[in-house]
Length: 462
Image (cartoon, rainbow, N blue to C red; front, side, top):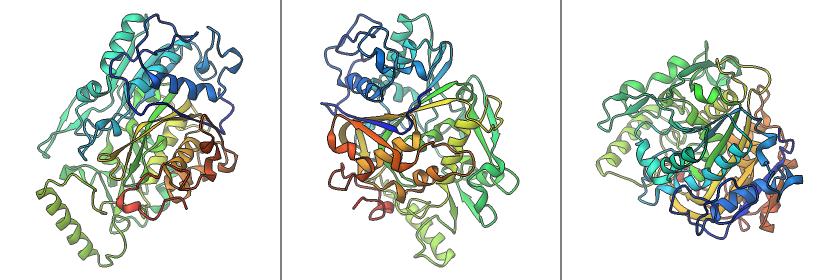
């Protein structure tokens, strides 16, 4: 197991573009690389490898054919889930979809190092938003061809799985059923361990992300004073190790969408997840009268839909810094990832090992998470503590993690902690000296990401 939870590695590569051709072989013959074929140019593979190296994983054997950086994380024969960020098959802003999703060239070296560690099973997966076409995502990222080619080279099968069993139809009227996770799904009840528990008594109505009207009341059925139930893909809960690969981008409901937020993809029923509370934190409190607020919300949504508006979502439905609901759901799902066994039982000790990596080769700002403007940064960020990695990535973006409850509150959990470091103890290792300032970065030192409208002037570093 990785002992240095306080370490976060940040590597700035020489390019802000992804290689074009699967399976994204490296362009350098590294001593530990198990294959003969190379590509002409692949700086992304090198950047991921350098990020892992800087963390000091298997440092004594670095440079030898026996270098096994994930050997402390993955024991021979263990099941590894690579939880990618495959959110949507398009960027609603009109910019590249690669500002929204994890690229296959970032995932490829992770697969290689899992196999070098002699993993028993390797599954690449995610649960995209309900309307996403998974086949298009696999084409955009090169994942389908990458997995196919690697399976031809290995005796062990690498699986590529869409964790959803329900997909929303484009006509906005119904859902269609698909195979989904062949291992099935587990109902996990966090009960009083849920971060939602303190707000259940004063809750009017939880808001859902479902666009299907009959599903919008679902959160109340599963999150109330009796229980807090999430539906989790069993493939994830069967894992011994989860490597969580997120995207460096903004998010309208939580500020940014990094390692903690992307864990939402393990839940196959996202319409059941509380995202905001109607009449409480759905929009800024300037609209005092509830009736006026609700009428205003319906009117704005009607106008935007009529105009086929593809830009910044309006500050309604919890899309602002005052959202005090969705961060609780996000942390709940992270607790499940850490503490739920394969049958959904919550334990006192973590049930699997987690490693966090952020794909920032092309990031996304302003209208995230589904309509970001692309921002080319050429960064890969990684570490063993998911909150520490998110906090450093936030600082590099130019955001103060203390102003984003989903990260800040993760460091202070009293029940079922999912971070094991103190922010002041985080150590950053980077090939760019300025990033080693870590949480001492200023706005001028940062990449100056522009936040979404609802978070503007509330999370930026000074």
